[in-house]
Image (cartoon, rainbow, N blue to C red; front, side, top):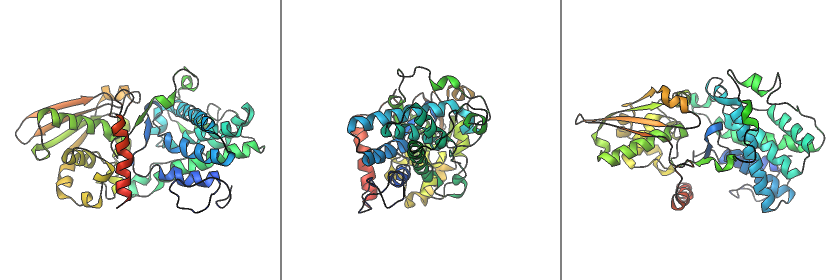
Length: 372
C-alpha cells in the first residue's frame, strides 16, 4: 500500500512511475476538488465524483479490470455513498458541520473497491465498516484559508481503498456501521437520520443519473443565486454598474458554509463568499475558473459590489432543501427600479442540464487556466 509500489497512475502524469492505488487515489481525489468544478448529488449533499472515480480508476488499474467492471464499480460507489449521505441527513451537514463528501464518500469508495476486488457480502460489509470508522471531514478550513477541503476527498479515497483491501485480507470491520447504536448515525448526527434512504427504490432510482454538473467554479450553494441574478440582468437589461444592492434569499445550509470565509482573501475562499461570486458573475456574465484570479481579488469594483450583497433566510426555500437547491435574488437599481428573479433548479441539475457544448467548455477553461 506504500507510495512507491503498484500499477496505478497519477492522472496528471507528474510521476514517471506507477504507484499504489491508495496513494494514486489520494492525489487524484484531492486534485479533483481544487477548482470547484466537480459534480453534486443534491439529496445527499455530496460531490461523489471526487471520491468514486479516482478510487475506482486506481483500483481498476491495479487489478486489471475492464471498462465494464470500472463503470459498474462507479455505479455501486455512487449508489452506496449517496445513500449513506442521505441517511446521515441535513443535521450531519448543517448542525454537526461535517463535509458529507468525505464522511459518506469513504463508504462509497469502500463499496466500489470491494466490487472491483470481488468481495462477498461479508467482505463488503467489513470494508464499509472499516471505512466508516475512519470517516472525517470538518469545515474549519474555511475560517483560516487552508487546504483541508482537498484533503477530504483524497483521504476518503485512500481510507476506502485501505478498508476494502484489508477486508480482502481478513480484517473484520463493523457490520452495522450506519445504524448501530455507536455507529455513524448515532455519533455524527444531531437530528433524525433517514433509514428509508438506505434501500428505498434501490435498483430503480440511481444516484449517478441524479447528479449535477457544476457550471460555475464556486461553491454550489452560490449557484442558484448566480443563475437567478444572470437571468434577471438579461431579462431586464440590467448592467453591473446599474446595481445598487442585491438581496439573495437562501436555505439554511448555505449560511452554514458561505458565512465562514469572511470577505474571501484567497481565490479558494472567495468562491465561498456569496457577495464576491455574485460580483464576478454580474460583471463578467459568468463565474468560470478563469474569472477567479489574484487580480479579481484586488479589484475595488468587485469588492464594492460584494459589500452590497445581503443573504436572507427563506423558510419556503429551506423546506425544499436538499431535494431542490433553490434561490431568489432581489436587485435594487441605482435608478430606483427593483427586480426579483427565482430559480428552482441550478444550471447543471438534471432538470436543467448542461448542453454538450457547455460540458466541453469546462475542461477547455481548466486547460487555459493550467496553461498560464
